[in-house]
Image 1 (tube, rainbow, N blue to C red):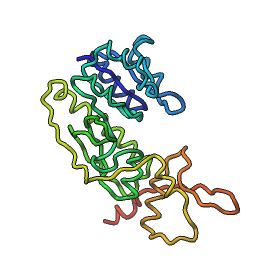
Image 2 (spheres, rainbow, N blue to C red; image 1 turned 90 degrees about the vertical axis):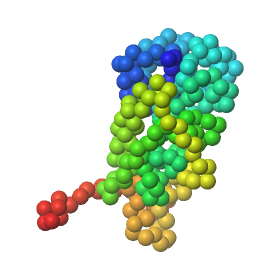
Image 3 (cartoon, one colour; image 1 turned 30 degrees about the vertical axis):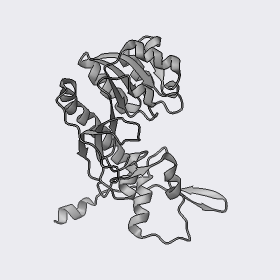
Image 4 (cartoon, one colour; image 1 turned 180 degrees about the vertical axis):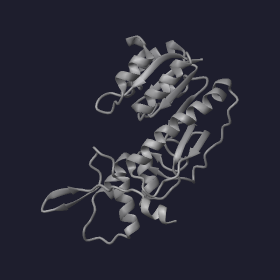
Length: 257
């Protein structure tokens, strides 16, 4: 099975590393450009491909690039933490389709920052393997796993657990995908939620004159706690004051029980 791999981030590297360890045939690689690329050096080293087999996510609409991908004849595409939209003409080049790893419990939290919105909106959190279609995270679901939000979770701690769950779900599902024996369930378009990258701007600025419930304010602050990213803030005298939360269970209350 010839694989064209669309990858970024630590999870993109680790899934590729696992596939390479199984001696799967990676015939091409699509990566991010700076500043969006993460762990790209590790991904390139693991894939060990020639320059002609490496493409960038922002050039997938180029007819010459599309022709180059067509020439390597991939059977299936694997998208792992890859954030560029894949254009419709490219979707037609894969007999086995393109499968995406998304760190959300679809159909909830399609789009960007699912770890944030699972906390803020109190929607189910998890990871999903699904086919890519012309929508954003709307394709048929292959497998999914719920990752419950803990009371002490921040955007960072939840994201880290979603990373591990993404790798685990892919490893568990790959044998059936490779054998063509996996399940495939359509999503219901009217269900779930969707967020764009810029949607976090609507919650980041804490209005000191606005009333929040304690629960909602805590959820915003912890959801946007992900150092070194700036996250939530309030403004005083033209200056921004950044806010982060540290949460932990009180071990003394556990001992009292």
